[in-house]
Length: 441
Ligand code: ARG
Image (cartoon, rainbow, N blue to C red; front, side, top):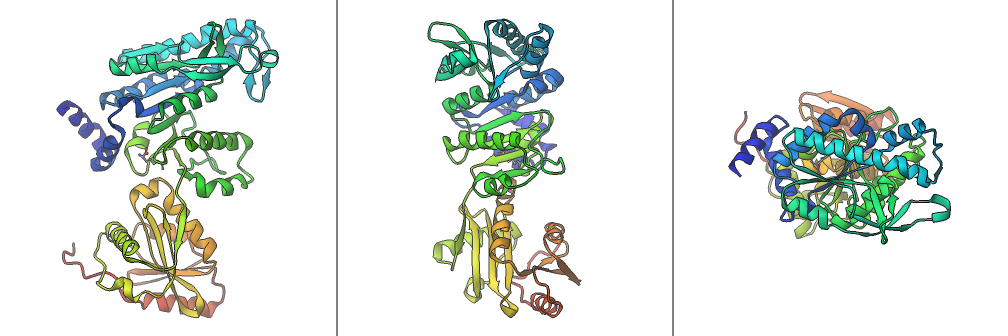
């Protein structure tokens, strides 16, 4: 244990605040070591980044975490079939698997499986290839698809046995019928079935792109399905492949506890994704509803105070909540992200506080509250300290800003010049809600 702790300190110290890293390590090392993560490795990663893959997995193993690895071999198979001059036919994305295709497919999958196992062992990590005995299948549609399996039962015995011996299981997406006929299973379907059987805390998709990409090819940091799904589906740049992926992920998460999350990331970013709040990749969660409170009661007041004081690192003045003329309060269900909006000048809502914990930020809840906020309040104004890191982001959200001393005033959706001025004067003239800081640095 002491040895592991020093590894954590050494390696994770470089990743960010090591407190952050320990927080996640604590979360991931639950009582049942089977349930840390299912890692699905794309064929492209096996082809191009085998060594880096093995060292990223070895890193997890050295922290005492036992990911269950599942892989396909799509690109390798395409190449092998082409070489054998066999034409690939697909129905709804499923590869028609004739006996000739199966003849090529089986050795290709075995080879990919062995490649991962050997790469891990080269890093000094004990690993076991599990090519059979996990997915018991029926024919999905024998006439149309041939030897394509529909998973009927997942047998976790071999995997559990490996994990218990601290050997990393590397599972291939092959199945068998009850009578032992080997069947091809689409890797996404195999992943889904395995995940449902294991119910892991984390689901990790390792890809060469390192996440889901937005319109300009940048990785989308977080998607909260509950609040972002509809919005994303209507974006013209979201292509059908990405929608399908999101639908699959939605379907997977629907059968898992709310705490489960999917991370789509690259081999090189895996550690950063797992052990920092901010992550490096795309985090997808079911997400939380954003609720609107008309007023604070004792309980919500207490939770709001905790969130505000923690995220601003200061103490609220006594009586802060009593003096508020509330327009509305928007909060994520867990109170990790919250906007407190007051009645302002000319009937324009004044955003008095916007607070988000680092974890909620990583989960995309800050952005979700903000979205609901700007839909609810089409006109809005607020202020921010010039040295507050969020100020930069506010510039992108606002349509007008005004800097005075240590403050920046912002407006959004206010078009009348006099009104903008009144908003600015009002917010810059407002009293502080925080107590004097005793220790000024
Ligand atoms: N480390 C946390 C996790 O793996 C948060 C990751 C946040 N990632 C992101 N791409 N926003 O659950």
